[in-house]
Structures are given as structure tokens and as C-alpha cells.
Length: 187
Image (cartoon, rainbow, N blue to C red):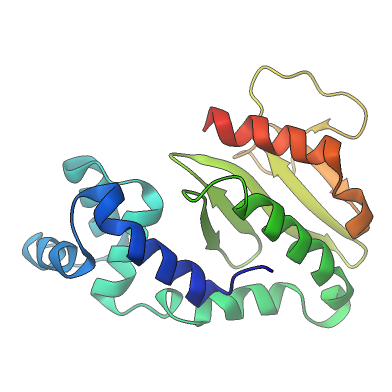
């Protein structure tokens, strides 16, 4: 079963000491002493000066600034993406979320306004409800030639190298899992 954004954040907090060497309260002290006054400024500081991955730095920054995205509002971003005419696409997202988060405990899920980013040390996939009938899966597979339904990303999103158009949860299959596994391992 797919984890809620709150459950994913709790998992990240639980793994913080093992992955970064400090607990959340310890990182919040680092954040407070950083002098950063903006979210992006603190994320940059934690990544560059403390070697944190983007996901953990983002989590600490949200907690430090008590940002809405660190709370259940991240779930609200996903709910908004799959509402109205795009509500029927939610089972596709849920199946992709399950598949992507099972790739490894270090998968970071970061909902944005229009899509959800999946990261490890860098972004390796995005899931975006592009039309009322289709979800676009962006995958970073540098050096892999487009073939069949694995298209070049084109103008879809410059942050990924390929796109797969998904119209049904049945399209989330073994071939798609193999591409995502390859992208995850390369990230």
C-alpha cells in the first residue's frame, strides 16, 4: 500500500540519523545557526556545507520554517493534481508511487504543484497528470536511445531524458519497472 506524505516524511525523519549522522533536532540547531532566511537558501546551505541530499535538506528546511509542504499540505498538492477531470488518473499515480517507493528506502517523494518528483541523490523520475486521460512519466535514462513507448522527453520536461505516456494502471508493467530500476540505480 502506498504511503501518505506524512508517513513518507516520518520514514525520512526516522532514517535521518542513519543517513546523515544527525537527528532532526540536531539538524534544526544547524539550520537555526545557519543564518538562512529563506527555504531555498537553507536547502543550498545544507547540501553544499553539510553534504545532505536534496530530500533530507528539503525536509529539514520545511521543518525549520514550518512550511506547509512539510505537513499534510504536500498531500494536498497530489490531491489537487488528481481532482476534477483528472480524478480518474489517481489509480495510475498510486500504482506508480508504490512501484517507485519500493525501489529503495532512499527514494524521496517530493510533490510539486504540477507533478511529483522522485529523487535519490538526484531526480530520476517525475509523474505528471498531463491531460484528463493521460499521466506522463518522465525518466532520467541518459544514453538510452528512445524506442517504442520510451520516447525522448522533447518539450515535456527538461529535467528528464525520456517520457512514457500512461493511460491505464495496466500500462505500469515489467518493462516500465525495468526502466525505472535502471534510472534509480543511475541516480
